[in-house]
Each structure stands twice: as structure tokens, then as C-alpha cells.
Image (tube, rainbow, N blue to C red; front, top):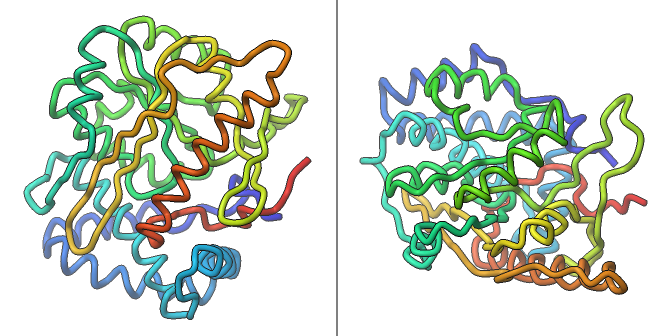
Length: 304
């Protein structure tokens, strides 16, 4: 299997900056047309992404033609471009719809910390930026291991972007302590729950995982978010910012568990239960918006 962390990052800093300049000068629509050429190029030269897209589209029951693969890659490129608009506060070009957002804001303002569990589905960035708009403190757990070029551009556009980022790249223990501190302060912590972290060089031990059914086959999901939620005794919400062409984002907030309890004598079964709940909710959303799924590697390869 081509593990996601080892897939080379697409593009160059120069290319990303040129695209940002194009979007600022000519507008989002013109830049979006240009992205079709980018998507076509990657559909041709990136065999891993092309095969992964075809496999996923077949599993979700969507057309898996070459044109569909290009549209899938274009959707990812468009959402990535929109991220740069959000970071610079340019909201006027977009329409937003929010599901259960008021409930989440109300919980956050009671002073009780909340864990938000997302996926590589739609835009994670729109959720973070919209939370800032309503004054809800949200911390995002990130791993920029294979996206340093994009993250460098993001930091240049918004120098304050690091203020609420918790990085897993260097010291996972420090990250866990930072997550606990944020929850103890009554803040929101957002983490992605659909990819296993890779084993790091020089650090023995495989990441904890739990197996669940997703789109008709077993997948390995990280157990870390559920172990964290068990230790923190905080609610867990599923979150996703689903993109609909040409300019609409729908933010979904759905309760997964009011409190995660992993029974000592049945921990594996408890983990499997929570993983199934998450996978089932994720499956509902990918069926509703199949081109919003952005895992362009062999997601269903089993790892022991």
C-alpha cells in the first residue's frame, strides 16, 4: 500500500503562490476554471491518486469514468483554494448553511470542552474559520508532515494561523498535553479521525487502531481520538464542511457521544462500537456528497 504520508506533496511553493495571485487578481471563478487543467494533469500523471479515486467512486456507487476522476480531483483542488480565501477573511464569495451549529456554540459557552472529530471530507478549514467568526475558541490538531509547501503559503497569508494549532509532527506527548489543557479551559479541539498516523522513524511501536466497516469493506481507523475522549470525559461531535458547487458550504455538527466510556474488561469492543458509529456517520455523508471525499491513496489496504 502507498501510505498517505509517503505520497509526495503536489505542487511547489511558486505554483501555489501563483494560483493565489491568479485568484486574487481574476477572481475565484477564473481560478476554478484553471484548476480543471491542474486536475486533468494530476489525473494523468499521478497513478496512485487516479486509482484511489476510481476505487472509492466505485465503492460509493458513483460513476468512475476518467471524467469523474478529474471532477473528483478538481473538487479537492477547489476546496483547497477556498481554504486560502477563508484564511484571509474573504467570505463574500460564499454561501454558508449550518446544521446544529447553535447547539454546539451553546455547549462551548457553558465552559465544557468538546472534541470535534472530522475527516478528509469537504473543508475542515471552513469550520475553524467560521467558529472564529462567532467567538468560539477552537484548536485544530494538525500534522503537516506531507504538506509543508502548502502550510508555508498558509502561514504567509495568515501569520496568526499557528496560534490555535496543535502539531503532532514533533512531539505527540506535548500535543496530548496541549489538547488536555484546551479541553480543561472549556475550548473546542478538532481532530481528523479517518487516517492512521504513520509510525515515526526512531520511535518504535505502531499507532493504535481499530477496525470498522466502511463502504462494504474493513478499514483501519485511529483509536487515538476515542482514547483521548475517554481520558478527557468530554462530548464528541462529528464535523464536516461539505462543499456544493459553485460556492456553498454546509457545516454539519452531529453528536457522536456525550461521554466516551471504554470499559476496562471490554475495551476492544467499546472502541469498535465508537468506531462503527463514526464510520456509519461518515458513510452517510459520503453517499450524500461523494466528490467531497479526499483520501487519494489506497484507503482500504489492511495493515496489521
